[in-house]
Length: 319
Image: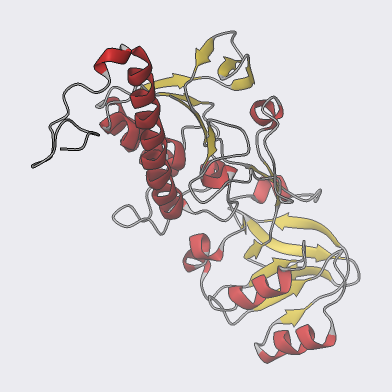
């Protein structure tokens, strides 16, 4: 069993499969999606932990069950389910779990890369508490940005919506924003202004620099194309891999979990989804093991060992 991705989803699946006494290798490129965040939030008993610290604790746990952790980058899948690593190594898998997550794609905006995780955020559930009651903003990057602005208002009474290149909100949405006390500043955003430790303002055409301590947006995203390109898995419009209810992709014996399949998956949900997927994968492996054992069994042994039911002759025969 090979798992591509050593984040929360990949390691959670590895933990379950390792405890099920499966041979598991996890390929980890060391670039988790939340590596820019100072702390992880919303994970019971670990709220506020550093993302790297949290993953290292799980790595120690999975090693205890014989899981092999491989530092490297999966460069593709060839010849069935042989995972090719960038350094030339190869790993053969009976089943492949893609837990490679996704990478956020920020708008082409001066200051965005510098502020990402330090004043520029996506999820208010992850970061809203830390910037509560401060001057917050929401950058219009999609049709859902108005809804995001209304959500961010939960954490502060000082919220500004910057439509940027999106259309100015229609009358109904504009009324909703005003009803919640959210200011709208139209015009193209030129840059994010950095302060001592992060964001300090948003520069807008025609409005100058609008003070802002934290800005939220919906970034674009992409799943690792190096691994998925050779598999020809079906993808959704958002670029994530499509799966059935159990986590199977459109390619036989290939599964996906975490942000690779759901861009909205947080740490807790990714861990839970990975647990359920690992149970399904192991059930499939058990079925394959039984089928293989049956094929190895001589035909004259297939019916042996069955106890006849009371009052009946040999199994399958009338008494």
